[in-house]
Structures are given as structure tokens and as C-alpha cells.
Image (cartoon, rainbow, N blue to C red):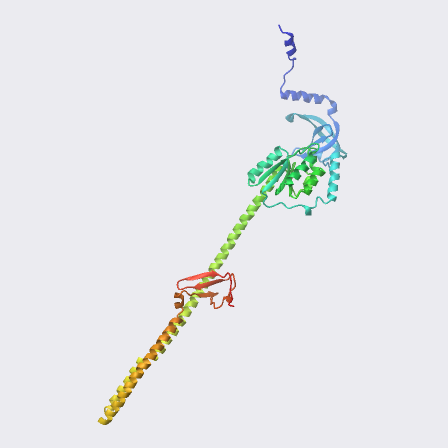
Length: 452
């Protein structure tokens, strides 16, 4: 027999149904309420998302939020509905079983005015524009290679997406995370203070990010404290707030706007990638220029070498011709040859004298002997003089040989195929060639010292 305690703990009798059966019963409840078949609901638009099957948007008031849907055929007849527009949406309520929520299928819309948040947004936007906050000329340039990035955001998916993307695509960049509230009462002041702290870090770029949200949740990024904090920052600011359809006054004054935190990370990583690609192109261009310069220099060196060889051959040829002329001249003035010619002449005279009388012959013989002695002495003297002259001529000839100075360590220096005699014939940076006894050197002139 059950006790009173058992009666107290006993569960009341209930019917157990599946999730699908529960949705069908709830759907039947909505069907029975005729007011839900066609109802007008007033509110303020906070989100507007076009999709392939229609348009999804949100109506809100200070107490609740209602999800709405309109087919494209109906939405095309709607008036222009910016965020913050106050409207009355007419349609029927249905239960979206696949999302376990109810929504209003809108057939028509009446525009009743502008919502308070949107009106505040428009007033701030007009005031900031009049102050020149949105001018492109005042915006700061983003560094081409940011090394340190200050991330201002709340802990959550937006910050995680940014950090993961940076780690994957730009691991060399150091990210400093400044955490702050990004929604709720006073969030605008917290964000502004976080931006000021980020600006004091001397980072290369500040990224203000949030991973999306409703219109009212994101409204802090339209408030004056955030806008002025971005304005007074000396560090460039990049925003990545919300999604594609979202746009805020913080985006207007930021130096660069991205759609999401991931896009902001991709933008910063892209700066490095673009710089690396440009560096690669410059390296290829530099290599090509160096090859062209080297090829041109080698061709110039070959031409100069050929010209030097031709000039050298000509100089040597001229020296050889002069040597041969000197040899022939020396041979013509050789005293030995002259003495031989004189001896032949005397032999002829002796033969002629042999036919003269004896006393005349003796007299002539004595005269001849005396002359012969004088001739022998003169021959020795002339021979000695000629030998000295020949030695001097040989010395001058040897000194005129262009290869002799080279053996002693001298060099023949040329520029553009011409031998140099003065340092002022060339300028610093020009190339000269030095012909040595063995080989040729090519050098570049660093400095020129003129005599005196």
C-alpha cells in the first residue's frame, strides 16, 4: 500500500508524444485562432536578409522580437525599408516546424515612420559628416607589412575567426588581443576605452571586430564615443563588424572597412602576400637587369680585348719594322765592313804598284805601309767608336721594346682602346684595362689624383 509520501512524489498522468506530433498539435492551435489568419503587427525593422526563396527580416519593439518572411512576389511591392523603419506588416502566423519557432508570413507592408534607433543613427551620421569625419583625405594609410596588430573585440566566434585566419595565413604577424564588451548598455564607452588602450600599444594596425548580431546589438558601433576614439587614434583602424548587409558609423570613419573579422584577417594577410609577390617580381626584374648588364659588360670587355690585341699587334709590328731599319742602318755603318772595303782597295793599289820601278816601288811601299798603319789605327779607333755606338743603339732599341718594361712590373693602361698618359683622361666609375707582361687586368676607377 502506497504511503502519503508516495502519493506526494507520484507524477501526474501525462500523454507522451514525439516532437513532430507536438509541432502538429501546436500548428493546430494556431489554425484554430482566426486572428492569426490575417493580422497586422507593428514594429521596427532591425534585420533584412534576402534569400533565394524570399526575404527574411525581423520586427522588434522594446519588449519582443518577431521573425518575418515574405516571398519575392510580395516583397517586390514593398516600399523601401531601411533598417530602423517603423512599419505595420500584414499577414498570417505560421509555425516553422523545421526551426521550432513561429513567424509572420508577410503579404503587405505599410511604412509608418522611422524607428528611434535609425533616427538616432541618421542624426549622428549627418553630424559626423558635417564635421568632416568621413572625408577620405583624413584617413590614415595602412602599412604594407604590419608586424603587430591590436585586436579589439569580445571573446567569441568573431575573435576566434580572426585569430585562426591570421595564424593560418600570416603566422609572422603578432596579434595583441584587447578584450571588451561589444553590446549592451555602456558598451560604446567600453569599446572606446579599449581602442584608446590599443592605440597606446604602438601597434601597426588596430582591428575593431565583432562576429555579427542584431541591429540593436550592433548599435554601439554607431555611437559617438566609438567614432571619436577611432578618429583620435594615431594608429590606422580596420573594422570587421557584422556581415555583408551591416554598415556602421565606425566603418565610415575607419581607415579600411571589412565585412567580417575573417575578412579583416584576410586583408592584413593579403598585404604581406601582395608585398611578397611584389618582392618576387622585383627579384625577377633585378635578375634580368643584372643579366643584361653582365652580358653588355662582357660584350664590351670582349670588344675592348679585341681592340687591345689589334693595337698591341700594330704597336709590335711598328717596333719590329723600326728594329729592322736600325739593323740595316747599323750594318751599313759597320767599321769591319768598311775596313774590308779599304783592304780591297789597297790590294788593288798594290797590284798596280807592282809594275812601277823598284825605287819607286819601295817608296810607294813605305807610303803604303805608313798609310796601312794609320789605317789600322784608324780602323781600331773607328771600330771602337762604332762598337760603342752599336751598344748605345742596342740599349736604346732594347728600351724601346714595349715588352721590356712589362717584365720589370710596368703595365700599359688603356681606356676605350687608347693608351692613357694622364690620370685626368678618365673619371671615377669608368673601366680601364692594364696590359701586364703575362695577361690583362680590368679595373674600375675609384678616385683620380691629378698631379699638383
